[in-house]
Length: 69
Ligand code: F3S
Image (cartoon, rainbow, N blue to C red; front, top):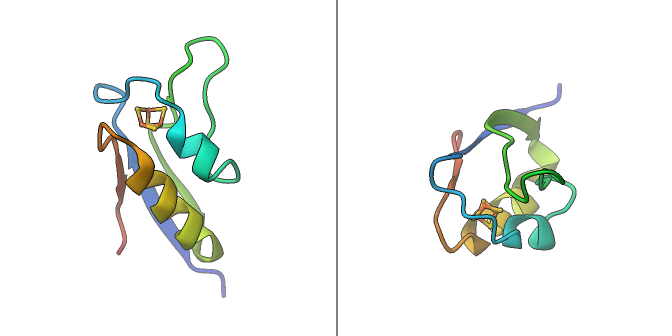
C-alpha cells in the first residue's frame, strides 16, 4: 500500500523565490516560462514527506501547505 500526501501551492501567494525547488527538486518544479511554482494542488508518495515539508518551510511567502499532516 502506498500512502500519498497532498500539497497545495497557492499561485496567488507564490513570488517565484524558487527555494522550494532548491530544497526539494524531487517534489517542486518551477515553471520555466513564468519562473513561478504553478503546481497547484497535487499529491506525492508518503516517502517524500520529508523533502516536501522542507521545501514548504523554505518558502518565505508561506505559499505551500501540506494538506495531510
Ligand atoms: Fe514560490 Fe515559495 Fe517556491 S515563493 S517558487 S512557492 S519558494
